[in-house]
Image 1 (cartoon, rainbow, N blue to C red):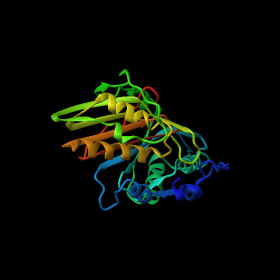
Image 2: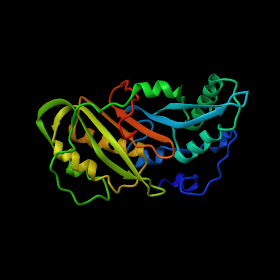
Image 3: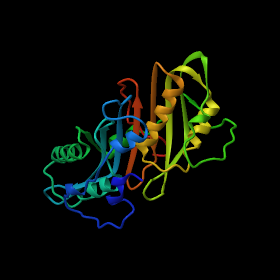
Image 4: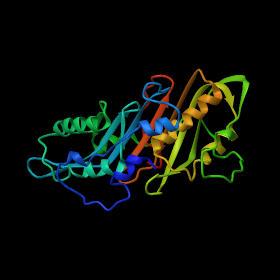
Length: 276
C-alpha cells in the first residue's frame, strides 16, 4: 500500500458532506511509486494525462433548481500528486447543495481546487448529458488479442519475463485487450480495464502480451501505476521508436480513470467504451 493512502478516506466509513468543502481532496504523491519503478520526477520517460470522468456532477442554481452534468478532468501525468479517488468523489458531492451563479463559476472552482491538489494545472470540461449521449461509445483501435489461446496460472504480480519480441522485425501496430484487471491497493476491490498498446519497434509477440496483461489480475496498485508499469516493461523490451499505452477503466463511485503514457506528445480523444 502507498504509505500516504493509509491516511486517506479510502476504505473507511465517511460522512457525505453536501456543501462545498475543498479540503476533502486528498493528494497522494506520485514520487514513492515512481521510485518503485526506478524513475523520478526529473527522469520521467513518458508524456501523458490521466483522464477522469465524473457522472455525478451536480450543483444548485440561485433559484434553488439543481443542475446535473458530466465533468471531464485531465490531470498531467507529471503532476506531483494523484488525487485519491474516494476523496475526489466526496469533494464532488460537496457541490450538490452548493449554489453557483453559473456553470462558468463551477468550472473556475473545479480548476482551482483540482489544480491545487494535483500540484499542476488540471484541465476541466463541464458537458451536458445530451452532448455526451450524442457522442455514443467507441471501440478501441487496432487488433484485439483477447481470443488468443494462452495458458497462465500466476496472477499475483505482473510478470514482464513473459513478454517476448522478434528484434529482427520492426513493425508499427496497435493492439488492445479488455482482460486487464487489478485490485485497489487499499480496499482490495477489483479494477476492470481495457488497454491499448500502440508502438513502432521490435515485433511484439501477441500471445506473450496477453499473458503479461492477465498476470496483473491479482496485483494491487492504482490505475496510474499499472499503466506506467506496462509502459516501462514494454519500453525496456522493445526499445521502440514510439510507444503509447492507454487504459480505460470501468467506473466506480461515479468516476472512471483513464491514464495514458507515451514517448511523444499525443492528443487522444476522451471517448467512452462499451463498459463505460
